[in-house]
Amino acid sequence: MRRSVSRISGIFIPVTDMRRSTEWYIRMFDLETIDLSDCCTGLAFPGEATFINLWKVERPAAVQFDAGGGVRIPYYNFESFDIEYSHTSLREKGAEVLPIAEDASGTRYFDCLDPDGNLIGIVEDLPASTYYPHKQKYKRD
Image 1: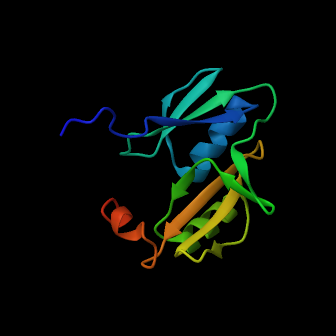
Image 2: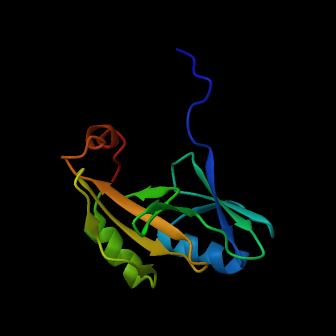
């Protein structure tokens, strides 16, 4: 069956200092540079199609929404298949990381902050999660 669209092409993250943010995202997440300019830098995980576009802005902009009760939810999450390793690795690289938490649906997660204070969700779905079987099909070492 032919689809009208096939996947998410990219996400856009507002940044105030392109050089600082580009270096930070590459160092933290081992990303490849696709395109580099003063207004937008395109990055990607090796072997993946979705772009992470850093977009130059004058002042920080929200990349999360208020879910009520003091809960902030990032507009996007980065996938982990080993949340403990991801947490330790990012902390050792100098990222500001929040504690690992687990929700009732079987997802372990933590948030980290980029140099502009953008909240980035890192998630791992456990076997109890309804998302687990789907995500296991795409697991790569």
